[in-house]
Length: 300
Image 1: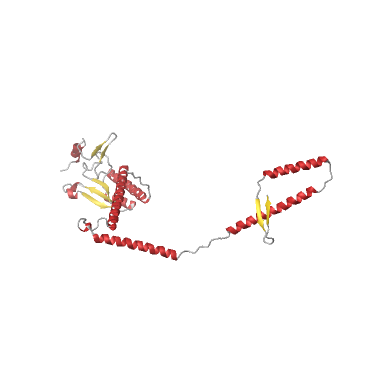
Image 2: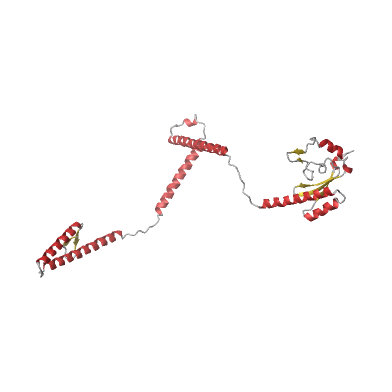
């Protein structure tokens, strides 16, 4: 016969495997505990009449234990599925726990409320996108980088060796020794050589087609004529300036009425003008006229 008080007296003094004691309180790890606290009223082992709520893959179930099924451990707990609607679940709890202790009814409803809130929070977090922090394994990255470098070097070396051997066989360095000494598929080697020859012939044909079907380009060819026009314009300007200087010289030779001071000032002005002209760089331009057949030189 099961006696609740005797069971509690045995397991209360650290003889329970579900007990978890810390500095502030003593907790219970039994999955059927309705509060999670280790005490006389909440212990599922020391109470022959007990009720709790458990979660199985998002579905809530009401578990009930009575003294009449204590002799059948495989049928000790009666399970009732609860709907997802919170109000309907409370109605079912009230219906099945109508004559049970009020403490158990209150703690069962409180557990249902907490588990419903937890399920709503889990759904919100599942819908919400969150950043995932991941660690970077530095040792693995370094190891893989070293392996990649070694593999690349080995591949380059193998390709260079293969290319060198193919060149030697192609040039006939080994002669007919490959039939007796070397154990390699000679037919495949011939196929590789034929493929390379086809590729070279194809490239040559493409180059010839490009040369035949060359693109037509149009180039502007008036650069030389523009330079000649510029030279002719420069020569015309120099001639105009030389004629203007000759006119000025003729006007200076005409007799002027004035005193000796004015003559001395004019001579000084002519000297200054000659000095200024001597400082400027001189350009010699020779122009040939088509009508007269003669040439004319001008200095500027």
